[in-house]
Image 1: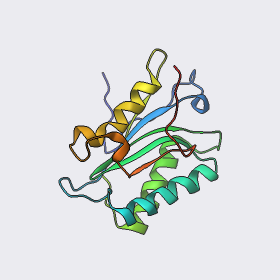
Image 2 (image 1 turned 180 degrees about the vertical axis):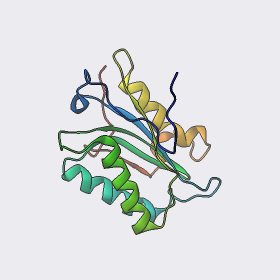
Image 3 (image 1 turned 90 degrees about the vertical axis):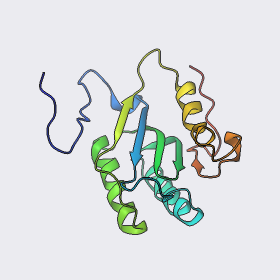
Image 4 (image 1 turned 60 degrees about the horizontal axis):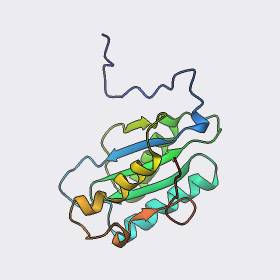
Length: 157
């Protein structure tokens, strides 16, 4: 088996998949672990502004975008823009690093939700992350979350 070498994970989308109709579970980590870099009011506001800007430019659709101290989780779709997912996310990381000083780990994790996987279960998993980390008692209490429609998505699988 040929495994990818180098610093980048393969983010190639199979030819039979229409990337514009899919939802991707994305995780991006900060390089330095054990220190709160993201779940800060000013930092979060700046990051969410960049999320909103890319949403307005139709580069992605953020169903859920949640920040915890040292990483983020998102459910994203990528409308037709002519730009590959790898490029959209890499440019976002590059821009936010310059603007906020966040040092991201190289690359990112992505998982395309496939038939039979529950979008609702993935959204709940993301929203429960601060509860599992004992940052809040209830997911609704976590302030560092962005929804593309302005409210929690009501996925019906």
